[in-house]
Image (cartoon, rainbow over all chains, first blue to last red; front, side, top):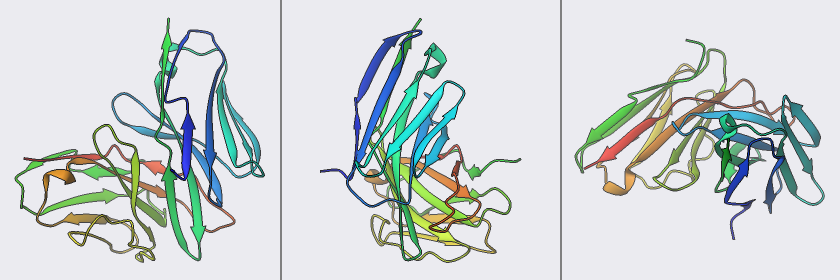
Length: 111
Length: 117
């Protein structure tokens, strides 16, 4: 079993729909990252959170530390949101730092 | 430039050759990470530097892989005697400060696409 699990693997939605991508992890973390990978391969860090909720434009990320679960929401989705969304658990252990990644959710927004 | 810079952007080489990949982090970023993404696969952590020091090398796939960082800045990832399974996109990321209490977002380079023939 992967330490970081994402769902769904693939998601297709109509423009304007509310999108939710889920991430569950089984390890102790110091932070949870949400990344966006564009079709060209570039990766952008969207959020890094260790508690509560963060919002940036139409994107919202939440985390529940007790349940080891995080969600990424996109409101009023747009075709330019089409990308692979990756969650990653940031694990800190006595000066060692690493990210463990989920397998990604491929989001396609249809005009 | 202001971002993380990686070179070369593409590298094609024959099996058995050595390759060296370079990462120029954002100026002042003390933490540097190497990842790879094989075709159709997720991202895989390779190694992390805090300054010039790499506390944990266990993510490197084999002893053919090594990495170093000098002057707390540029890092090189070297793969010796390349194999076809080494073909992947190798990504570098940097962040400003890294402690358990003040993690910072990582800024990614565009990657080096390595193809082993």
